[in-house]
Image 1 (cartoon, one colour):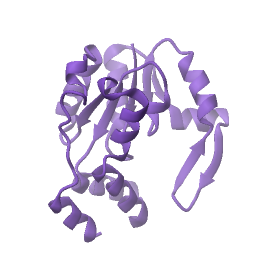
Image 2 (cartoon, helix red, strand yellow):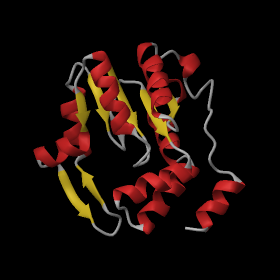
Image 3 (tube, helix red, strand yellow):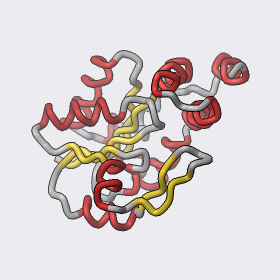
Length: 180
């Protein structure tokens, strides 16, 4: 089994990726940690509080692996595997990012990315609608069960081509965003 797990920072992608790796007995491939270990960091963008990695180096290494759960904010760039996109409501994402110590500017950036479907659009452009699957992570056990169901049977009927379920660009969320 090879599966990519992506999402805005704070949505729960690493938690769910680790759960899936343990559940299915395959390696958990944390691309950010691997990039640091292998020297694939091209630059640290201190203004945006992020690192830029050498995607080609990471792709070459990961594409050669037979199985695993690929965990990365940009997991849609890894070929040949279905993609689970982990989603999280803006208020919960705000809480999680505050707990991580993110700056308010970074929190606002990530909440806006989640509200305008930034990761979903990137995933659909790279993977296609029938290979992209959404998992809303409000309650962890429920999200893990949905992720397991999709990982066990990544059938197009469960993909965003047939059931886009998460919509965060609402008046309520925009009002919340404006208070930040």
